[in-house]
Each structure stands twice: as C-alpha cells, then as structure tokens.
Length: 335
Image (cartoon, rainbow, N blue to C red):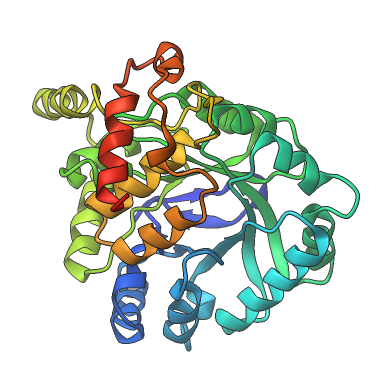
C-alpha cells in the first residue's frame, strides 16, 4: 500500500481511501466487515458526512476497537457558527470518538463561503473545535471550479476535495496547484457518480496523477474494495489499451454528461441545473433512489419548471442538450 502525506495536515494516508456514501444502502454489520477488511489491507482513510444519513452512525459502530487505525474525515453543510458547532458534536457522537482528524466545509457556493468565513460563520466553530482538540484539521469540499480556486487562497484550508475522473478534468490545473501549495487533494467521484462502469481503468487514470493525494471510491462490498485496491496499487504507466478505454469512456459520456462546472448558470427560472443532474445521476446509476429523491425534494425549483428558453445551452462549454436532459430528469422524478 502506498501512503501519502495529506498536505499541511501532516497525516499519512493510504493512496486509496473509503467513500462513505454507498454504505447508506447496507447495514452496520456489513460496514463493520468493510472496516475490518480495510484495516487488514492497510486502507486507512475514511470519508463520510453529516448529510449521508446513517453513514456516520454505521461507521461509528464499525470503528469500535479500530479507531486508531484510521484517519477519519467528515463534513457539514452548516454555514453559521451555531449550526457548525452543533454538527461537530453530532458527528463526534455518531462516530463514537472524541476527535475527528479532518472536518470539512461541505460544498459551499461562493456566497455561502463568504458566510462561512464572516462574523458568526461556521469557520469560527471549526477553529474553536480545533483549539479544543475535537477536530485535528479543517478542509473544504467543492463541485465548483470557482470555489476550488478561491479555496486555494484561504490559509485555513488544509485540504480540498473535488471531483476528478476520466470525464471530469476541469480541475486538473487547480489540483496541481494544491500540490504546489502543500494542500492535500482528496479526489471524490472517481467513477463520476457511477456513470463510469470500468472502475479499474477509472482508478488507474486518477492514480497516474501524482498531484492526487488520496482517492475515495465509495464501496459497499468487500469484492469492490479488493478490486479497487488492486487498481490503485498498480503504479505502472497507463497502457495503450487503457488509454483506448479512457478515450471510449469519454466518447460515450462526453456528449451527455454534466460536469457540474456551473457555466450554464444562472437559469432564468432559478433551477439549479448541476444539482438536478447530480441527483438524477444518483437516482439512475447509484442505487440510492430514496436518498436521491430526498435530496431532489430540497431543491426550490424542480426540473419540470424548465421553460425551454435554451439560454443555459448557449453557455454550456460541453454543448449538452440541457433542455432534453431536464425533461428526462422531470420524468424520472415523476413530475
């Protein structure tokens, strides 16, 4: 197992970690089996979140007797000091621990990032928790290139998590900047939310980038864990065959795959286009129908509100048929 230093944190983490979204669809016993297998294999980085329903709780139970073998990371969408302080305490309780190695601000918009860092913002609670020893380090996760770029300028950000995979390479230069600034880079969505059906090739592509500190594929089966680790442990250069597979994946997904760059915004009727497609992806590909519908229900404006003005399509750098994709999403969510 290859280990890397997670930027400014100084934490030594396995090149492949564990993404805690899929365990929502299993149970605590299966999660325990996964934790035991990870400890045996040397996988020592675990990612979860307050927003992943039972994920923190399952992991807390599963980590009994194993806590010191793992670097534990979670995150919260709280934006105020009061809400973040509350979430930190909930996370500590759910995870059955007295400290969390890395606590992250979960996917803020540019406006929300200002709230987080302003007076009475979530950062104040994170700093106080760090001073008290409840959390070790502070990071940020993003889906927006704009937020990623801004995070690189913030001295309190020790790690950044962002999607990077065969079809989502819009953050490549910023990932390199993380390495230059000694900011740990955590790669999420290595299989593009389940859209990429060849995990071995996907992970080989990611691990061929030396600026990626740790990649966190989500798994719910031990077989997946073993196969993913095999791919991540292969340090040989990408073969011609693998490069051909990468080209095929890009060709298959490139014409109708939302990369969540948000260049399509603003929608004239207020639809959060990337979030609609994100939740539709979970519904269609990730076997998390209940969770996807629950998240979709939180959107103020649904896909069915699309008036087909087409302005978003003129701004999409990937020329996606957004209007047709909106119709499909509305249909899939039963609107």
